Length: 542
Ligand code: DQQ
Image 1: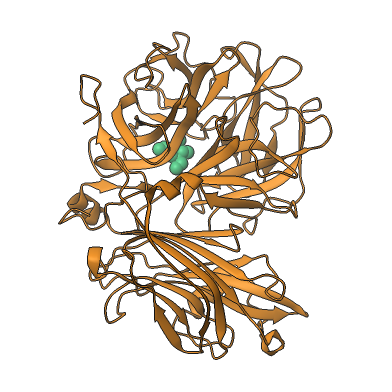
Image 2: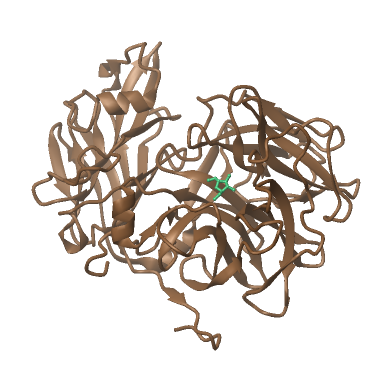
């Protein structure tokens, strides 16, 4: 981190400066990954007149920043180029659909295509002359209609897409059909809707294999029930992404989730994370998602920093073997940045002890740790009224001694531990079953005031008698992104240490429970800095 900029990230995507929110239009095309994002190029704060920032990469690690792909200058988007998605058409032709806020402040959906398919970076985009291609439906408020998904093609030759909306607080994913991607008609019934959830932002709808970690392209059919479909929506009122897993039949245009979408539905991340979007990577046959990690400091802080907003590290995403939830894992390319590996095995962490993980750069690291528990008969009963894991983590922070837990990592810790971001587990029993809670406690993350230091928490669906409790944490100066239970539960925290910065940050494994736990294995690496370069006008990388 440059002096005066201790919170710039080393390997999490950021634009050179100013505001960034949602990931948009990710795709792989002819050897290049494209990442677009909601961007205000004029300051480190949100402004409705959004542009589409654009960066390209060959490995999803090192990025080249290009000029904005879309600017709000046409009647159909003059008040903002909002979120949208890419589709690669048969014949290898990319298109983009995005929301424009038109000259009358209505949200409409627009189409754009690359100007020159032989430009490897697809720098210039041409907005379709007939925009908008989808107008505001009747009976919908002008600011309640946005964020088109990737389109998918089915056997009847028709393209489909979803647009997020609401009517009288019922969250809606409108379904549209088209033969030519230009003329769209709204299907009679939405793909899905749930009363009381408010507007659905940035819907993401995609198939997953029932028995493979591979990803699958959005248009793939489901002849022998080898696929399920995931619908993820962002609830603006909650500022949280939720998803359901279900069965989709394009013939009947019917989507039936296996569980209802509610405020206790599954989430891709239980921390600071929103507006996530996935895409299919044909090179490695995987589905990758990124999500917007918003600041938790103030607007004055943003102005002092000159920037606001980070993206989560790209994750592979697939269906768990139990078919009940998604699993996520940092993409393997992170290994390009690994250096200074330290590791050990079978180390007992007595109750009330700390073990420093030395030999790596603790402010820029990748840590994998697994805990083995025994004597689980001794586990505490979970208070039956404690059904909200976030509340458990808030009421029992990292300093509160339990029996099994808290144990985990103290990341971005200062010398005297006044600053620390604790990621930890507690194990309980309830009705004869074990319950594992994962927490990320930001309450001591910074000595600074005026920061939202909310603690996050979620259950991890594992049986600690059978399985070790795995934790992987990516630490990057001001972001701590954690994967519990091998990717079953993800929690991202945004933190601003004042002491635990750069070379002064330390990393510990800790056990603050009364029972000992065994670290069956630890591996940790320093991470090199990824390259983020601006393209020179000549087209040569600086
Ligand atoms: N952000 C965009 C909208 C979207 C929201 C505007 C979600 O298109 O609904 O920047 O964060």
